Length: 505
Ligand code: SF4
Image (cartoon, rainbow, N blue to C red; front, side, top):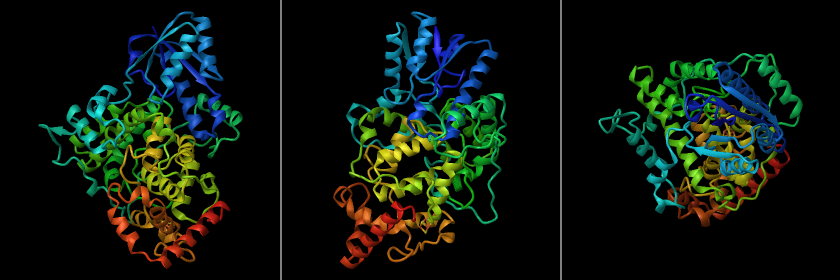
């Protein structure tokens, strides 16, 4: 038996690789010609694969490592040398990937057995039995799923009850840091011959990629080996987790990382398993290293959101990828592609993505997605931008988060859109203080663009939104505005659109 290890399954700690010493890896390059993937994402992916290959060989595995333009070519090369071989693969989470790979293998005369992907805490069967067939097509409730997983796994549970007495400590997790607070230094990782060679390859092969190409002398931002990923996890548990909870929704100028864990890049390619990350966080509570509200909030991101997204995506594809229930039509304005903008919040968030392929979850949802949603960008254009721009982005990750949640292209994840005026950003950040736009103004010169876009968004989508979810309060405010106010809002929105299209917002 040979285990086929994909680039997002770089672990020897779980799965069928534990029962064989023959491994196949295919490093395909052609996919990255089709989208302008962030160079740091490609560096992370190819370098991690090559490091994993070498660590397996050092541990005695026999690894066939093929570089090819496509998986099809790679599979053909493999079966020419190993006719009729039987491959085993952990099920890839992105829609249709398993079927496509199976087809390629069978076309070359081999067999492919797909097994549970043990990089995740929960299984398909667990979610499907929770959701039940009757829930197909309706909105799934994340909070219900989260509690179910806690009960089933015993994570942060004691005598059948949540530790600390509450399922959720969000009310303690919405603080902004005091002036004297500074986040822990962000760890970086050193280059070796492999990363230097992949760096040269990526720079040469993908000159049109979108994102900053770091100098080869500059330390790596993202771990590319198991050892580096574990050292990052150690640092997170010891130095970041405690403040993660209270400041997880905050945004500060010139602070891209705050107390966020920065583990998603390593987690999403298998350098860490979800179970070990959850176990380490739960142990940090037991030993008193971090308080319950931080630990609970952190674990909810993984077993609540991350696992939930994977399952909802699986059950909602392929329709979810094309969903656009608000009939949005706009392309992404140039500022998302590095164009200048005076908007302090958007400028910070876009630059974070450009510089490192990363922005934290509130920047993703309440700045980058919120603006695109209210501006009218199609969910698909925004999804593609997230997919190519973020080091931790894969189709199964971005599609539910961006199309379902950020763009409200579908109501499968939420009964109301995450649309907000500038007030939320003002409350959770220090950006508005240094922004040339006036947060207190909705219309007229220099009014914060989020404000007029918000009211216009509610008005434009009234037919779809008025009766849904918890929108009653918002529409009570909509109903109070008179014709003069609406005319001023429309005029400001027209102005915002034309400035954005000209790259002058
Ligand atoms: S004033 Fe508006 S555009 Fe400026 S930082 Fe605040 S929310 Fe963003």
